Image (tube, rainbow, N blue to C red; front, top):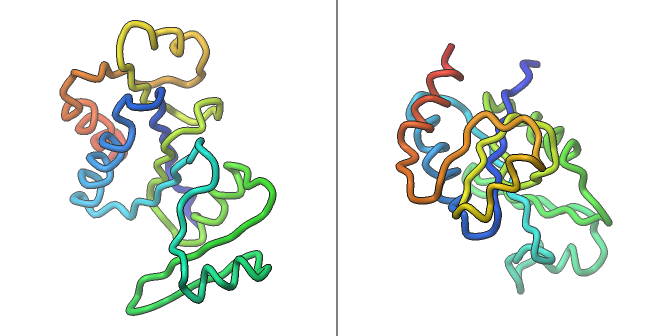
Length: 153
């Protein structure tokens, strides 16, 4: 199995991480990369579809449930803690070329650091493996092109 390339997009809340990730995913998929993403939801449990059979399965005690329809596969799994490494391992089963992680600032994968303003510059000293630093008001296009070009090589 080919090991996917992993890239993190990090920054404080409202720094533009989700926008950057969606732009990067679009640029990579246009170049025929198979891209998977991990989103760290740092504000409690993520929202799930309620009043559906799959959510009823989880509520009744199932640790994992999968729903498939017309090629779309949705999985819900619940345990006390999912490590980032476990999440990456699950995604590698899907054989992506690239895994983009939104958040998980403290992990040591190559990072794009998004800064809202000068107050966020403390992250430069606190985080490891920063490859790109982008200010919120900057045009992300050049960074995205650079990342795609490096992944093509």
